[in-house]
Image: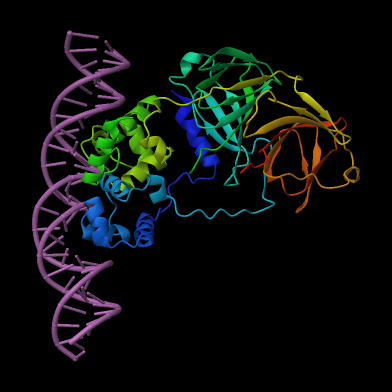
Length: 210
Length: 210
DNA sequence: AAAATTTATTTCATATAGTGAATCGTCATG
DNA sequence: CATGACGATTCACTATATGAAATAAATTTT
């Protein structure tokens, strides 16, 4: 079992996205794009190969387009999927936000190898994602693939000792108080080597959402 | 200089299609993710609310899932759509940088109120700046003005107790293990309130360089 | 190895998406 | 007001995705 997916999921949640997919007004968004380009349904039909009627229904949320239909859309309109999905960013530069997390009050995300506790998860739109992790893994073999995610990661050992395996380096032993900063798209994995499970604090940069 | 590319481009333009209408092995990708997590179809069914049979057919490219189905997938598996679409990056232009700081080996920056120890300062071009701080200040009066810098800051108390003064909030007492995330252009200042000087770990975002 | 159990695929009925033609609404023109 | 032109929606129908159950394949247990 790999921590990869859960880890990423944790990051995704921490970065402020809802775990459950919101309505996602795809129809509305499509219409926006179409009108922004002064295209008629017929135009879009030409470009995408989808019927006018189909497009109309998609825009009015009367049907949920098939994935192939979505592909035709993004292909025909020459847009990216994120562009189709993400509504224009509000980008509220609110000042003075604050998010307190008392000890032990983080949001738990257990996996077989790691036990994550997400900190400061009240706040969306963060540029850093902090979490505390109890390292359950005891052997590198417990990971069936590298943990890997875009961006950078800072990690400091709070308790115990760990062995940090990375894709391009020899395993590195880290004791309590040691810290490391690395590009997290380099595969990495932690195992505890102290008597008790080690605890580390990590801070990641969120996934790019361009 | 390649005639081929131009030729291909010409064909592309002529056919009105996008550069690469890649097959987009969504099924294959799903299966990868599922197996990577050691999930059974039933497990995924539970998580997503989609029928086993449907999942099987999606994995085997026998159907093109409805967009709502895709949403259930990304919701239930707690992955991002890009993750579902993009096959594991073939060549990640991963740099694989790494910067280790052993306990106490950071770069010291003493001030009257704080004693900073910069961590991971070998590495330039970071998106996060981690440092450990011993809080010498004992009274808010010791600061002549707010500490204030662009970006965001994450802070966790490693030892002792502190009082966090912020521009827009009441002072907040933080004990060992408590953490907080805030916009650091909001004025802030820390004082120790425990017997010994408290120690905190902070991570800041660097100044924007647009 | 056979039986039992778990996991994946296939079948089939049904629900829903996709299509072309008809309809409706709006706007312009005679 | 009628008429036509255009764009969007609705209708009737076909194609296909979905889910429950049956079947097959793989794995574990006895």
